[in-house]
Length: 97
Image (cartoon, rainbow, N blue to C red; front, side, top):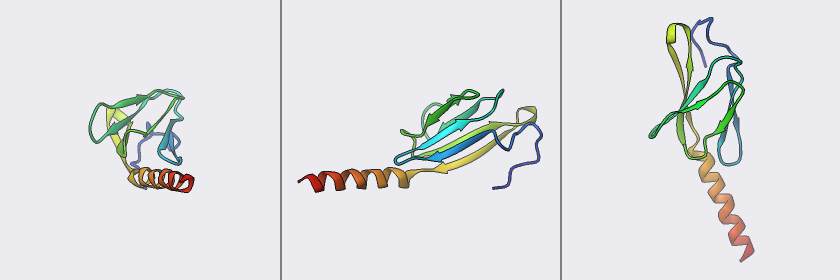
């Protein structure tokens, strides 16, 4: 992924960690919030040093604020995580029968 040349945008501003059924979004910034923007619904602000998950958002964007209030958006499609988690749950139910 190529980010714009922006001294106000840290290359270590956040991270995405894939879990079994969702994505953990961590804000590593000490000063700037980042925004999780679902395809429908309200934005979720992630304050500096905080984290959130994508549990209710199979498709979402992460929005970072750069120089002069400009934004950089990273789009994330986590639909396959939900399907995989549902398949594992169905397998557990089937194996108990």
